Length: 212
Ligand SMILES: O=P(O)(O)OC[C@H]1O[C@](O)(CO)[C@@H](O)[C@@H]1O
Ligand SMILES: [Fe+2]
Image (cartoon, rainbow, N blue to C red; front, side, top):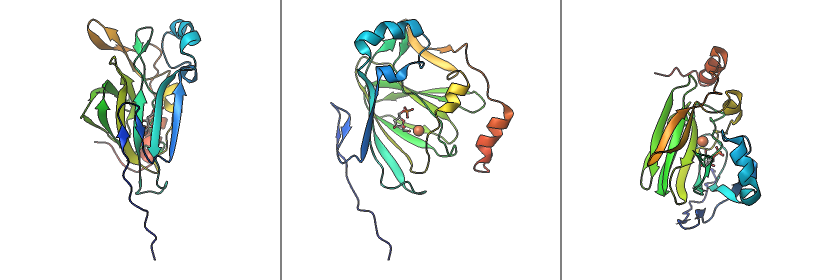
């Protein structure tokens, strides 16, 4: 007989970003994020005071890692900038690249920065009560452009996995988000290199799916 997984409810504490009944959590401290930001000198200047501080933390619930199941959780990201570039997550594509993800903004003001394998860029707002759909094959990174914590719920297929190397291999994401006059603005990353056709077709080939 099939043994069913026990249903569970998880209360989210908006002041801390913690989720009750989480099966795991991790924290990314400032010092863990060396190399992520364009302004290396600004990063070094902040290291003494910021080094041990948490930039973002994740609490998650992973029932199983089986295809068809879901992983969900909450990310809390502090407000701040390195030089003029806002705090952000490392960013990744799913190791099984055809797996999508949903985010739901709960507190603060954020952006979801997305990049297709071919290098198209999309930016969606991630404010409270905004649902953001990250379709299959899009590299994704969240950014806190507000003055307060950014708290977001996320949910994705349990067999997705994460590949962080795709961003490193291209010299970062194609766009960066920096402080502009009265808000954020998108700037080109001069270090960005396009992915070659072989890598792109390997990503799509995983699923045999051809993008529209
Ligand atoms: O894994 P990264 O790119 O550091 O960013 C963390 C965020 O992405 C996730 O890995 C979900 O895909 C969450 O853990 C969290 O929302
Ligand atoms: Fe993801």
